[in-house]
Length: 108
Image 1: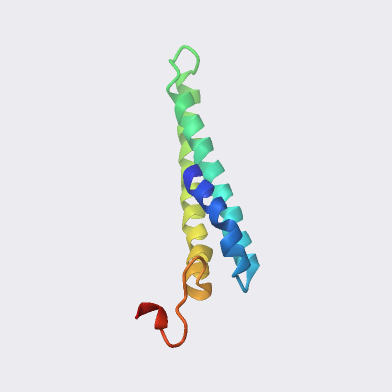
Image 2: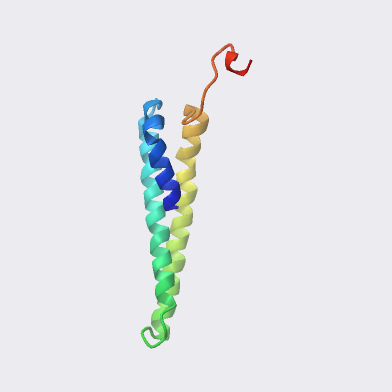
């Protein structure tokens, strides 16, 4: 997830100059960060679950599994939502795409 955000940041300069509706781009960017942080938190909790039982009692481990499930469901919802403004950018605003001229002379 963080690699995808890094590569998008490299193209941000090009894409942001061509957008007619920049709030869609900002919404897409913000929710991408929220999604990345959510899944990073889930990874951290999953790593904490693997600590030997000496440090975590069974009840705490079960509680952490429920918290992990909630975080992963929230992350999945955010990942689904972040695709909506992303597809709007590509299909409605041609973000990052080379749009041919009206005579299509670029393809001859």
